[in-house]
Structures are given as C-alpha cells and as structure tokens.
Length: 420
Ligand code: HAM
Image 1 (cartoon, rainbow, N blue to C red):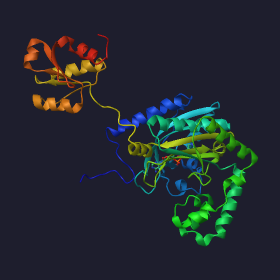
Image 2: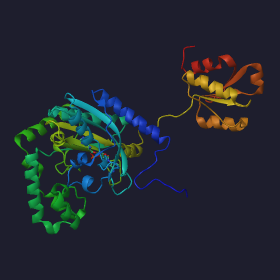
Image 3: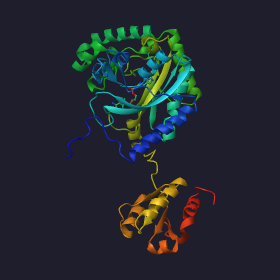
C-alpha cells in the first residue's frame, strides 16, 4: 500500500479520462460561445460571506462548506459553486449589462461521498446578468439542451418550476410550514428537523413513508404574483416555440436559497444511482444586490461534469478522444535517429512517438502496435548506412523504403498533414 491515497470524495482523473474532461469543456465552450457567452475565471476561494448568501438554511452552507481562517486571519471558504463568485465579480467590477459569462472548474462540498457525488467535483456553467426577460430564461435553458444533445445524450429530462418573487416565496413557505405542522406526526424525525430550517426542502423528501403527505402539500403555483405567473407562462411558451420538451414539476426545489421565478433541473434517466441530476439552475434576481452590487436580475445553470460523464457512459456516447500517434519511429541504431525524426515529425504537425532505452526491434515493434500509430518508420543499421528508412503501414502491413531526408515529408503527405 502506498503511504497516501486520495482522500474520500476526491479522485485522480487519469489519462485518457482527463482528455475526455477537456473535450467536454471544449464542447461546452463551442455551444455557449455561439450565443455570445464569454469565458470567466473566478477564484477557487473567497470570503466566507460570499457563499453565506447561498442561504443560511441550506446544507451547502451549514454543513458542507470547506471554510478556514487563513494566515492573515481572513475567514475564507473553498467555493461550493460559482454563481455567487460570478455575482460578487459583477458587483465588484460593474461591467455593462447584459453580462453573459461561462465558466468551468472544480467546486468543493463536504458531502457524503458516493457514486456520482464527490467532495471535489467539476462544473461547467453560464450566468447571464442584467435582464429579466423571460425569453432569456428560455435561451439559457436551450444552451444546456443543445449541449446535452451535442454530447449525444438522449435520456435527459428537463424539469421546470417557478418559485415566484421573494414575497410569493415567503407566503408559500409560510403556508407550507403550516401544512406540515398540521401533519407533523406523518413526518420522519429528519423531515421535522428540515421543517424547522427550511420547509421547502421537505418537498425534496425521497422517503416512501412521506410521499403521501408531500404529494398533498400546497403547490407554489397558487402563490405566484401575476407578474411571476406571467413570466413563467412566457418561459413555457418560449420553450414550446423552440420545441424543447419539459415537465412542469411543482415539487422542484433547488438546494440553494437564492432562486426566484424560473428554476430548472436536468435529470438523466439513464443513471440508476440516487444521483441523477446532471445539471440545474434558475433565476436569482436578488443575489447581486445581496452581495453589495446594484439591483441586477440574473439567470444561469451549472452542469456537473463528473455526473454527466457517468450518464454518457450509461448511454455509451461521448467516447474518449483518440490519443493515437500518427507515426512511431523505431530506431535500432542507438536512438539518435528516432530523437531527430520525432522532432521533425512534430514540427510537421504529426503526432510521433518512440521507445526509450535502446530496446530490441521486437520490443519497439510491440510499442509501435500499442501506440495505435498509422505508420511505423524503421531505421536499422542497414537502412542508416544506405540513407533510407522503411515506412510500414500499420493498417495493411505494406512497406516501402524512402530516402531518410524525404521521409518526414512523405509520411506527412500520406497522413494528409502537408501538401506534397
Ligand atoms: P447545483 O444544483 O448545486 O447548482 O449543482 C449543479 C450540478 O452540479 C448538479 O446538477 C450536479 O450535476 C453537480 N453536482 C452538484 N454537487 C455535486 C457533487 N457533490 N458531486 C458531483 N456533482 C455534483 C449550482 O451549483 C448552481 N450554481 C447552478 C446555477 C448556476 N444556478 C444559477 N446559475
């Protein structure tokens, strides 16, 4: 056993998985850039106060924060998500709205680690600040839909809900609280504790014994102001206009407290574990102001990279990008030829590999096979003395001798890398 292993809830992302992660982010960049979202990088840790705005009744803040006092005496926390950091950034720099940004990177939550739920996990996401246009909500949701489609996922269901404006939400929470208090004997001790802290979260209960009491609870739709109801209607009309399928789920409560009006979540039906949410988001029209900025509406979402890749595995889509070499140079004359040729191949744009340590022909040939290279370029003592190299197609086994000076250009042309 080595002395150290990754700590619970963290993982090494090894090759070739790490390359797949990078492609995932590149694919996301491609989708959201087409809609005018620009890349932003916010710090991985911030003043604890930034994240306390996520809600003092949420698990993310009360139980899962990685916070500590730094050597300068500042109370900071590793980011559990990136929306708060983006809004802090907006409040700090005051860019001209609408401000449309996207991000990627790790987040930290001290959760119970399990399959699909980690303590360090990656997200890609967007935030659009400065407009309360309901059709912006639609556009933002459509980006996530496009992205899942581009990955090849077919089994992702969009759930939407409206949490109304802050007044609506407060009235609803009050009604919900009264309702659950009236049926408290039907609730588990865990839900009774949740009720104290955040009645909305009781709706999230997955316990079989509580499904009836949850199902009969009042719905948020009865509490929406005319403005919030009309906003939600327009969001649904926009989704219909784009042909985006959705389920209105009035029990959809998100795990963070800053939401108002439109909220949504994407569930993968291909995942069997309890962790099926591959992404989620919504409006947070009060968050920038809460962080000391001007009153600024905002909407966004984040997609869990780790979990979405599990969904890709389940649907057998979005494979690893190819890491195959174009050329493998086999040199049995000491290695200097391979060193130089590999360098020249790379300059010509061909991915080239070689073996190290002066290994025998057979071992080098085996390494060439393993590399998946399209061509092997072989230089033995005979070839070297004649100033040639043997070029072997690893696809059909055909061989030809080419002048050493011309071999890079020849193979590059065969590979379509340069005009011959
Ligand atoms: P969230 O629902 O907390 O929202 O996270 C979004 C996604 O991140 C989840 O659907 C899930 O796929 C992934 N995720 C969350 N926690 C974990 C974990 N412990 N392990 C693996 N994956 C996880 C937010 O973070 C909001 N900032 C989204 C947002 C952006 N709302 C508005 N703008």
